[in-house]
Structures are given as structure tokens and as C-alpha cells.
Length: 261
Image (cartoon, rainbow, N blue to C red; front, side):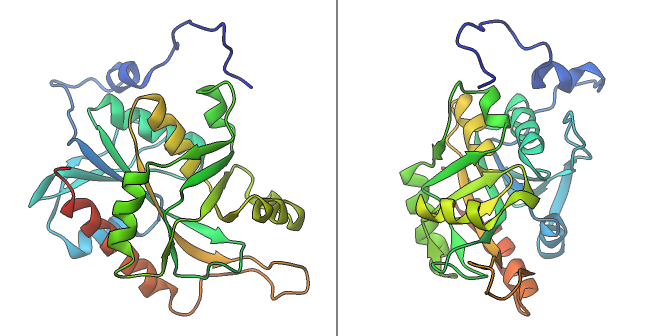
């Protein structure tokens, strides 16, 4: 626990004051009300290659790095950014987007599957995400699972099940990619989780802290061995590049078809 019940003091650095502190601008930045946050390295390039896009910010003014911010010219109510990797980076992205006027956030990411219930290329819209990252504990005194809105789960299932094998299984977010031991993954399976990523629980918890119900959509990118006798871990499969591009394109379509809701 790192958030203390008795602590009612203000944060020394906030996203709102960081946006203007060392980024002297002639006018206030105001982003569209909806943001798609990609945690997939090729997603922004795929967006630019398939849609008529425009850069509205060369770099979102995050504390840690910051990607360009794009819109599709025919759908100006939705913006697209790369959120970075890991929970501190995604929390920074969420804080910054909210400071710039965003009210609706969709995370499009990937996860490793460690259950026989899923395979590479499946889509998971988690009902709840186990937080095994440290960022969320700076926003909440105690946190274990972070739930996703049932309404958003239903919307996601309705759309993505037309294009992929789509499930609403639970997942887990970790800070330690090299400490996903056989023991730990068996524990995760025993509490009904099927996949692991590095951002989802932090994005959910930080968004909810500010009163926003975000949507999390994950593509299973790789399959972990269930036990030591199984085939060694390997990334993706021979068709994964095309599966990933299809997932990105459909994620964009999902976001813009619902841009006014």
C-alpha cells in the first residue's frame, strides 16, 4: 500500500501543470473527446497506411516520452496515440489525455496466453484484470482486480466476435515480464485468468480514478507453455503479422463506428 488514507495533500506534479510547464504554447491544447490508446508498436503506422489521417499534435506532452496524436479526417471526434509500454507509461498517457480534455478511452493491446482456453489470434475483452503492477497502488489504498464495464464488454463482444474468436475471460497485468514463472502462471489460472499484459489494470484503475470507464481489448500475441514438458515459449505464429494488422484495422473501425457514443 502506497496511498495512505490520511493523505489528503495535493500532488506536487500534475498532468495539468506539466502540460503547460515546459511546453509554452500560444493556445490551450484540446483533444477530441475520445482517444484510442495503442500498446502495439506497428499500430500507428498501420493507421496511417490505411486511413486519411492528420497529425493534431506532433508529441503529446507526457512526462515520459510521448507519441504523435492523429485523427482520421472523416472522424475528428476520435484521436489515436501510442500509449507506451508498462504501467507507469500508460498511467502517464491516461493522465495526460484527461488533462487535455479526453473523456472516453479505448486501450488496444496484446497479451500472452497461458491457458488452454485461448490461442494466438484470439481476442480477449476482460471482465476484470488482476493488478500485479505497482502504479495502481498510488491511486488506491488496496486493489486486486479492476473490473471493466459490462456495457463496454457487451459492445466489444458484439463487434469483435464477427471477426475473431472473442472471449470475456479475466487477465492479469504485471510489471515483471521475466518473473512469469510456472508457479505464478498456475496461480493465475487457478483464479481464472488466461492472459497477461503490462498495461491494462493500470489504464483501468487510473481512468476510473478520474471517473472514466475505459474499454480494454486485447489480442493474444503468444502462447506460454503450461508446464516444463511443453514446447518452449515462442512469439506469435506464422500468420501473426496479418492477424495483428486485421486486429488493428478492426479496432480502428470499432472506435470510429461508435465515436459519438
